[in-house]
Amino acid sequence: METFSELSLTEAEFTPQRVESHEDPPPEDCWDFSVAVAGGPGVGKTVLIQALLGFNENGEHSRAAFLQPKKPDGPLLHLHPSHPGLTFWELPLDYGSPDKWVSEADLLLLVTDAQFTQAHIDLAHSALIQAKRLCLVRTKVDCDLHTLKGRMKEEYSRVEVLSALRTVILQPFNDMAKKEALPLFLTSGFEPNKLDVPTLKTKIENTSRELGRALCLAQQGYEVIGYEEIAELQSALERGGISEMVRFIQNSLDSLLDTRFDLAFMGGNPDFRHSVLNSLRGLRDGEDGTAHGGNPENPVEYASLKYPKASLWDLPGMESLESQPKKYLESVHINQYDFTLLFLTPWQEASCSYRSLVLEIKKEGKKSIFIQDCEDDEMPPGPIEEEVFVLSPAKVPGPEFHRFLGYLEKKLPSNKLRAFMLSLPNLSTIVIEKKKEALSQEVWKVALLSSLVASVPVPGVAIACDLSLLTARLDTYRKELGLDADSLANLSHKSGVPVPKLMLEIQSPAGKGVTRELVQKMLGSATGIGLEVAGVFLHRFPLLGPLATGGIAFHASYLILNRCLVAMAEDAQRVLSRAQSPP
Image (cartoon, rainbow, N blue to C red; front, side):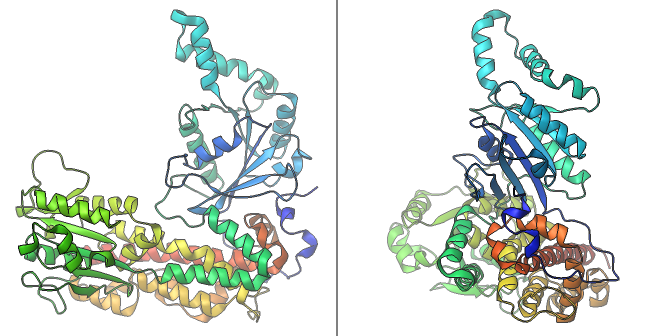
């Protein structure tokens, strides 16, 4: 019988030798955490997993990416779009020897929609013998509550009924519970996120921390890997082999990296509008290349100083075309902008012409919001509409600016959001964190591409990786996060903090500078983790099975890119903090 790892790659297919390293191997990472969900057919395992991953039928991410089992009635793998290393294995209760499955899971969830049977007890006993973490889950409890409420009528007490249900459901485990505490979680079928699901999420997160691989089940704004891409990747492999899969990944990466973002600035007081535009480019009013003066006669492009594919556009005033919004939008080429900021003067409410303008923008399939000028840094009285953001140049960044960023996260496609976030200077720690999240979108693609296209093994490393690709992307991360010489010099000029003092805050090796030699050394340390970790990791991507050592190369590349990205983001946070501190 196959185990998780053997679904993709048998032990006999592993041939590379372990690399000797004088450094201690790094610990297992937070991206590698497995939850086995075992139960009979129809008990609600899939609904439970979707709820734990934060998905619902009406949400933006309505379902996790999943990989079909290789054998009938085999396990089904669910991947989280934002956490490719977090996996849920949906297991039929009666499929093969439970010992094989439990041995590779970090946490086992035993699921039933009725009473636990001897099969559940046997699997729980096997898990405890192997010192595995275990949780019991009873689904469809809402049906029990509905039935009992109808029978008990006035005597019904939800709290008392739930307590009694817990006692009854745990009865088959009474003997086992005397030796080991068995947590029980009750869930709903019609409202999957109600009852004990939030508590179960916390339990899973706490377990991951206890095992040294802390994770968060909260859905992020960036979909790293989705169901469609997994399906297309598998299709490419089946259609044309490795070369076709390489082409697919390269095209996907090119599409992500070449995404343009154009942001339009329209209306309001030109001086205020220009101040906000300049702030988003990391410039102060009056510096070379800043927006200034009155309303332009034609749209004026201001390229981002951080991201070549992003531009901010200063648009002409409506003037004589105020009563003809459609004609005005045609004159400023509204179709070329991804998002439009409509500026209001202090305390001004959107006029009928502005409302008409918004309607016309929506007809063109574009999005817009209002930015209200705030004099003397005072917020206007009363509640603020969701699509109105009150800003002052003195409060960029600030709570209202970060609310604005959160709004864009909800409204923009992930590739457009990525381009916008990377176009921003390091205005705040929140912006740096969002940049890190944006860059994480590409990590698994770069890692997989690196492991597939390499043809010459790295000296001293028992795998083949594309050193040039890894080095180039890590150097890009360093620049995007503001750790390169030009960015530090610019920050020093604005803050008055000497560059050497800023550089003292950069602690990670990659943050100080990325070279082929450094990447080669990190690869040697990463592969030194051993085949055990690589083997377990490979079940995340069964399509890597035929590639043999490519799976280990993928794991090592993924490990390095993620670690360096996290470390460089922390460097950027420290550098910003130092720049904002008194000299």
